[in-house]
Image 1 (tube, rainbow, N blue to C red):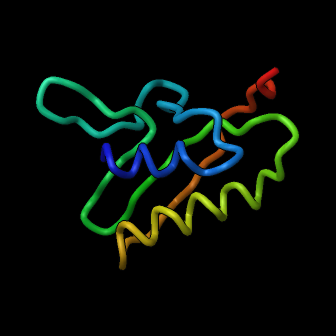
Image 2 (cartoon, one colour):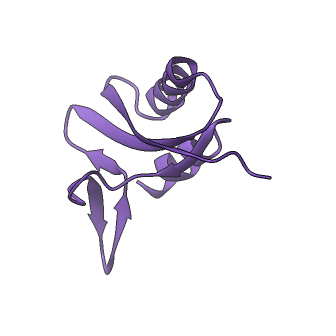
Image 3 (cartoon, rainbow, N blue to C red):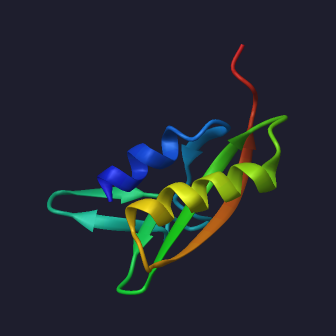
Length: 88
């Protein structure tokens, strides 16, 4: 989950990972939680915040491709939860 989170945050246009509306999206690790990444046996759910002004679909596709390369064979579901102001 940490490796996936770091890779997603490195995708241009991704401002942050998002825990979901009620904090339901995350992966529990010993003593902590990785918000915004949910791993199952067959899929990876990724919830992100994009930077205002970036192409949302292209950014989501880049996230899907990045995660797909790290988790071959898993279905990758990307949800854009919010938009953040562009850094100044």
